[in-house]
Structure formats: C-alpha cells, structure tokens
Image (cartoon, rainbow, N blue to C red):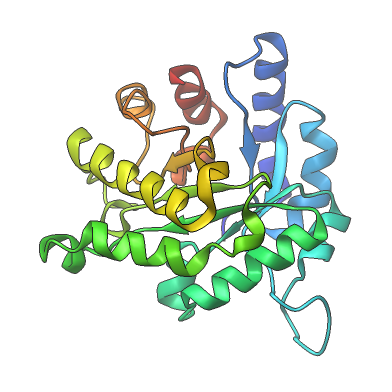
Length: 235
C-alpha cells in the first residue's frame, strides 16, 4: 500500500535508465491497482506492470475486490498471488491461492505465486516442509506449460533487515524446484524461482548467484529508482 501519482516520476527515471542500458534481466513493477493504468503508460515496453492480488471469481458482488480481467483491462500482464501479507493478514489458504492462479491464467495474466515460512516454522526446522506443502497446495495443474513464477519469501526476513544465509536460501530453492516438478512435471524444471526477503543493492548480487535463484521479488527497495536499479544491475 505504497504509491501515489508522484511515484510515477520514479518509474520514469527507472524506464529512462533501463532504456539507455538494457538490463540482463526482465524488470516488472506491481503497484497498487490505482496506478496500474497510469504506470503502463510511463513504463512503455521497458518495464512490465502487474497487480498485487486478484479475486478468484471473474465478476460479482464483491465490493472492493478486483478481478484478474480488471487487472488485464488496466494494462497489467502479471499478478502477485499468495503473498505472505495476504496469507497472514487476510487468512488466504493454499486452495484460495490456487483458485486465484487459475483465474489469472484464464484472464491472460502471468501468476507469481508466493510461498514461505514464518520464524516459528523456521526455528522448528519445518521450513522445507512448510514451503513444500504450500507448493503442492497453491499451484494448480493448469499452470503446467504456462508462464508463471514462484517466489520464495521467508516471512521472517521481510522488512526486518534479516536475511537467511546463502546456504539456507539454496536449500529452500532446491526444495521448491523439486516440489514444483513433483506437482507439475518437467514443464516446471525451468520455471523461475524468485527470492524475496530484504533484497537490497548490497546483497542482491550474491543472492542472485545462488543455485536455483532465478530472480528477486523486491519490496521496499523497489520504491526508489536508484535502489531498484542497484538490484537490477546486480542481476
């Protein structure tokens, strides 16, 4: 819940920098729904734009909610689903996240499905177990053969400045890959697995070099063009 019209100036700065020196990675921004249409106009062909969530239903009496088709209509091409803040703050279950992923696909959006353990689950030695369960429950079979991504976000590292060790990141990413293949077959062998947990310009390079880390789901550091550019250049 960050971003007003003034934030579009940061997007313009980011777009200009990326247009001048093309990055080695794909870049996307997922703003509040109120900014999607305006942001697509500023981002041009350099930056993809996505939503932060969508409703599983296609339409109906769901005041305040936004359907996948509405995001698509506003110019979005991606959507984040099952973010830890949605799972914890709104009680979203794996089954609900899976139904949202199916709705996103039906609307022509590329889902980014988030998974991750809490501090209590990590300390209990259940990180891999929890994440595997979320993969099995949150990825519908319809994703097989379609473009999507999974984002691993250790809940205890988001916004805290804490970061798992590189070994811990690799362990979970390898477990995510194995679970994805078990769930969807070899079609998921090349699906990007993003890391999201206090990614900053000064740690992005080493994190992105870890086995099975195929990108980053960036939070607070994406609000400023200079910080986000530092991460992008580190890719």
